Image (cartoon, protein in one colour):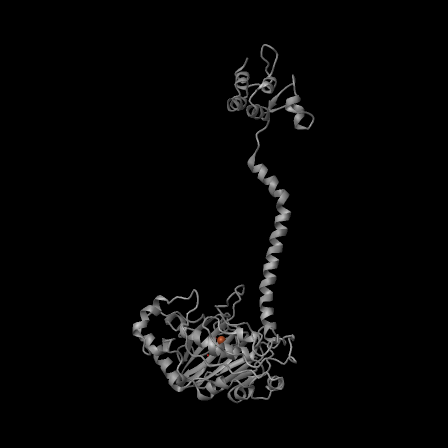
Length: 464
Ligand SMILES: O=C(O)CCC(=O)C(=O)O
Ligand SMILES: [Fe+2]
């Protein structure tokens, strides 16, 4: 009787396995002519018997012609050990196609849902509800509880109806000085006829300005005790009425097509608008604040790769204040002129500065924004007009369409995709407040570097 036979008789499957690993011949027979398989079969402990039998293989068994338990009296060998890595490979090979299909379908569904989110916002303003429901009212006010209206609801004949959104870039033409406000006026008249005149929303100019996930930067914290005009940072007191142009505030309050028409100029149909928005007092205060910040020597990042002398106001602690402005004023204007654009959820707010021997102008570019508001603060300057071409991606995007002349206190607004650039300043210094308004498109890469500067590459920097 070999040690192998003894291990089987004792039911010691681990010892049995060890001996097999040491190449002890499992086919050897003891005095009565029995091999280890015969002994294993006689093992009374069922689990030991199973373990022993699993270690043995009859040569015919591998090709499916036999079974260890039936291999009485014939040659035995150790069953080859399983290779877990090989097992995994086989499993992977079997499941690869299904896994690939599942991942592809999941990604495609995610992409589809992300895409239709924009489309659904495009459609939303055109879904007409009863006078009080007003889904459009819910579009504004990402953070603070702004109670604002988005202008007239479109006619429905009294019940619920849907309309197709106009092509992108088209505006209902509300408030244009060139007469294209007729669509909006028609809407207003239809509303009146249907007894659904939209009530002007109360004007809210204060609030907490806090938004989830936004924190005061280290620079803002250091700058707080050094502020020149703390009122500019005080969201609870909010935006003071005398910081605004009186006609602009009247238009905001009345919120009628007539009021907007008389306040707003439409320079490029559906693409570029402007109005006197802020008072000289406010512009001067903001310039003083920017000068004051510069004098502290605190670090300031530049607004983007094309601007070497501006500063990012969000970083000096002005973000909450602009949140209030965005929720209650800017979103309301954007929704009036581009109702297909989703509600804003963020902004990049900064100052640009042009001066001889510094940045004199700005190359043609598109903004990393959905809608840009651009307010001229001062100081004295000549030249430095804002030239516009077409919308990025359209055949005319390089063709000059209009040059807007900045005036202190006047704000213009355009889509970020509208190509534009600042002409060189010829004298003095120009400072502008820029608010790049963002909608929640997490999948959209932010174009923070703008376009490579043609100026630096010696190429023409203006539209054709
Ligand atoms: O200087 C201007 O008026 C335009 C500035 C601008 O387009 C920008 O900073 O994105
Ligand atoms: Fe720009």
